Image (cartoon, rainbow, N blue to C red; front, side, top):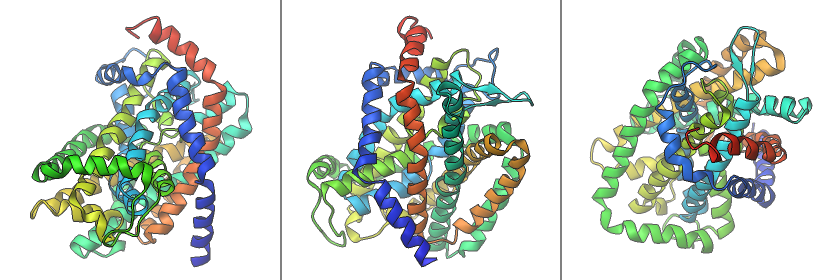
Length: 443
């Protein structure tokens, strides 16, 4: 196991070097400019997310598709991921994480647009779409589509499964002294109950769970910031300054240069909002929407809520608390920051992380099963679901670093064919956006 962990860490470090970071940020910036800054339509997207397109083809509402995607993205990336980025890259990592989210809005918009445009209706009457279909139909490259589906089916076990159960089992053990295997077993059973009902069951649960969990978590963060409001300006200045200069060792913090802040900020930003991965478009393709741009605008708000808002406020809470200097990492660091709210702080975090984890496991189970369905047909879905529930249990007992390295590696492999499709089909993106948005402001 130690040899496997070492190999995964080495591959992860190589893949997430400067070239991939440049490719990801470059794609975000390129699409932002090519599509005339679609970030300016974020409020239109928020308004559309609350509207209904019931007469259009699709399996779930636009809001259902959005909350399922948010369920998959708002999770440990917002809590443990931000804390890990700060612990390894210093305060400056928060800046790069946030910037990745701002520019990532354009990429999330583009992914969803292509997913809806090239989606198909399966033999059982449900919608299927995502980068694998974009690669096969839009680019005429089925081999790349199969590669993406394979990477996604495997990556789901990392980013959407093992990382999630690992985070909550670690926190439950530290807070309640609850054995890891008990937490894993409970999560496995709850997961099985929901995912056996398919996308409509998943969307129904996520539609109720996501708004509630996000509200209480953000409320807890705001309370902590209000309690220490006088140091917020200094914390913001530290985040921006450290992003370009790095940060020297202080307290229990080992110190990190600018490249470390950039690497871990971008990596955790991608892990958090998944812009560029191509995962969220899989569920966007199932939405009831009259045209591709309409759902693209709705999907782009997911990155806004996830990273631009939730991740930023989490990072500010951790930096402003000063606890990042103590050498703690992951969920323990976030728990230390939340302990500034007497008595109820750790409870808010534990309940928030539990709901985040559960919803992420549900959302990513759909991504994984649609990918395996693309590769092996509908007969492979049930065995995949069984394996998924078993992986939830196993993830609760793996070491944190191994799980994060595995997730990072799988994410990078997913991103490569997806980014290729986005760049190759950028002309299609412009044409669809011109037709439904630039020439028709009502979409």
